[in-house]
Image (tube, rainbow, N blue to C red; front, side, top):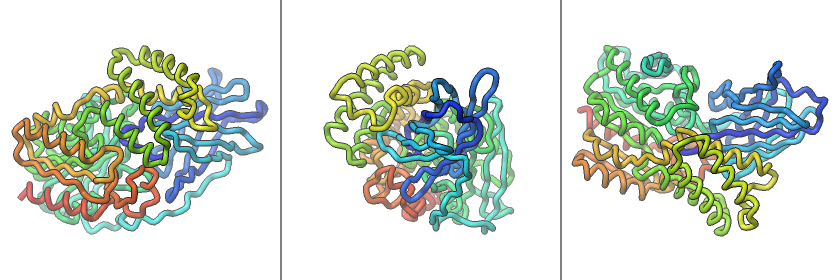
Length: 467
């Protein structure tokens, strides 16, 4: 239910049982994620050429997400969005759609209706409230090569003076400047803490998200790195920014992007990798899938079979040189697997098999995913010569700490970088929350947004670099 490090496809499938019912207009629902209900709003429009639709996730700051295909035929409406990894199947009963929302084998009931939904309030004690005790400014800057404008927030300890500034780089998926997910705003909390401790922060909406322009769905990590370069260029125009002390903080995929930028730009003084990766994307996705499935209580048989299918899909994606061919090959393979009795547990109950297969294909067969699977961050890390802080939580199931910290350390050492600090923080998950199991299903239920221990580690280390 929550956006994970490698979660990038959202597919909705809505099955109507009444042909006479007008399906156009707005449909509202509340996804009951434990500890953090999430509102979803589906907008359907009919034209001479058929149906089109968009999706809002207002609690994550994502509005007007374009739907790639919307079809209504034989009382069935199929909607697909190439952006997250989810399936929703529902039946129309009166003025309501009653169905099941599924992601990664984990399912929740979801009811859509015409009535507006108010989200219950959740307790997030670390979120700062205005007025802030420091200077905060809404800013815009351009990535001229991509012809897009990025919108963000620059915070400085005071309105006067000159300060070191860090640029925040989000994880995978379309994120706003607060990296808002699972009802938390980790980048807002980090920014507040760092700014109060003398470090300026620039955080911005990803291209195509929030108030930033551009198309997120066609971009890869290389494109996001160019956005960071544009942020650096912008900071160099600001009088209150210490041009010699500009750093990068990347979370998850942002921890892949930060080293890429540091290698390209002499203006990067230091980088902080929060749950950054050191192993190839293909290896990461394989390990991640097994760990999360185990944490969600899947049986050994289910874990083994889903791992076999996932690893085969990964190998096909890595070997492919054409996205459409990859989609066709994956479809042939997955259809055959669903007809295999041993694979019967792979497709969640109450989910349409055809649409579930489509969801897996759209998740795997994108330029972003193929690039990520082929990318070996060690090759980039070997070329990083600025100071590096790499931190991971020891309960992180999405970017396992031991494997990745060891790979990061090995690559940096191979390149001769001697200013390296690596820390495995006890009890913390992928979002750096104090957690029980580290499972993504816990993220929303935890009140804490970001561990004070992790905040202190990051702040103290940065201040040492800019002294």
